[in-house]
Length: 76
Image 1 (cartoon, one colour):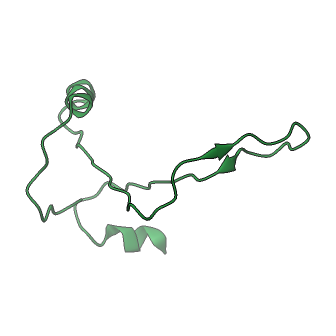
Image 2 (cartoon, one colour):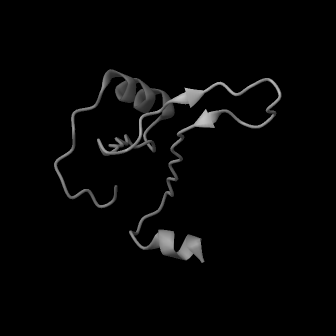
Image 3 (cartoon, one colour):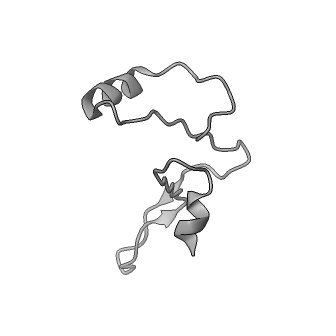
């Protein structure tokens, strides 16, 4: 995300609305998932199963900072 190596993409209507609502410190973010990644499919478990739903989930971690090596610092 920082520093941007490509020209910025045009903002979607949702991104424009969120940037306006969140203020001048907000930054737009676009995430692309590979076409080879599994699709988001959830299976409804049986009633006897008390755990979380079965399926594919993606977690995205975003760390604010002013340097590209900040993540290594947070990881240790």
